View 1 (cartoon, rainbow, N blue to C red):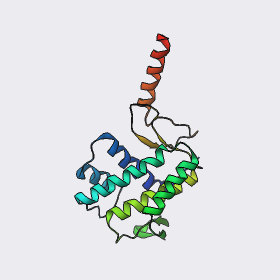
View 2: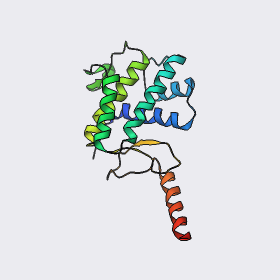
View 3: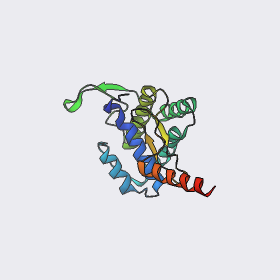
View 4: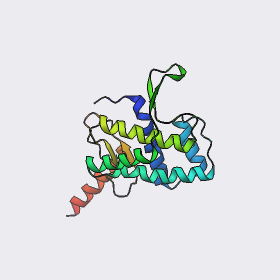
Length: 175
């Protein structure tokens, strides 16, 4: 399955924010770094805005942890209701037509909410309700977007998959 990279920006930003919160390294500086890496423009971030984004990030996590397509759709619909602006097409900066979910004049919190909610909705449709997940390793809190060919990713990284495989192997040998 091919995914449109333009629609991935907000999904990847969602992953970065949720994983940042999960690592315990959430700070104004680290959030700002994630926003800049995700090319969020005008990413001025007050302490209050940083806390609002952290609260939003915890709502984003529900999308990745949803146990079924129906629950995932419900979680995305909640995000759309509370965070999405009115989408519109644009061709700024010489880019091909793409969607924006909030005007540039909105504050950074509103823009992040809109782009993450809108992008997760589009990705959920394109992925037929699957391909967003939380790492299957019980000691890992990371989430991921599954863009693999077969769409059966269960771990955030090969490292977590290997750790789990070794643990299963050792448990099997003891039994």
